[in-house]
Length: 71
Image 1 (cartoon, rainbow, N blue to C red):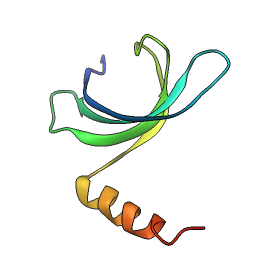
Image 2: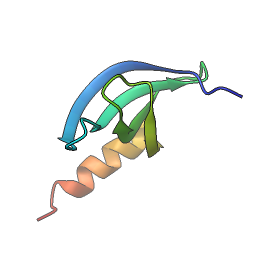
Image 3: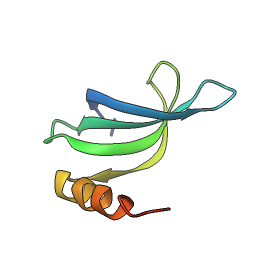
Image 4: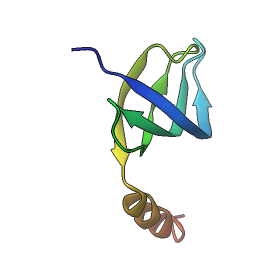
């Protein structure tokens, strides 16, 4: 089964490897479902990706709150 995805919004590129892959936080719709926040490595053309995690808006807000006091 092919995985279908659509990057709805690119939020931030966190880093780039020497081979051009980027670690990105995006809003992504997977297989036509409601979009979720997604953190993973992407090939320069966005046709290949590494393993990543998806988060709901509530999880992102909780993470943001937790990182506010992170040193």
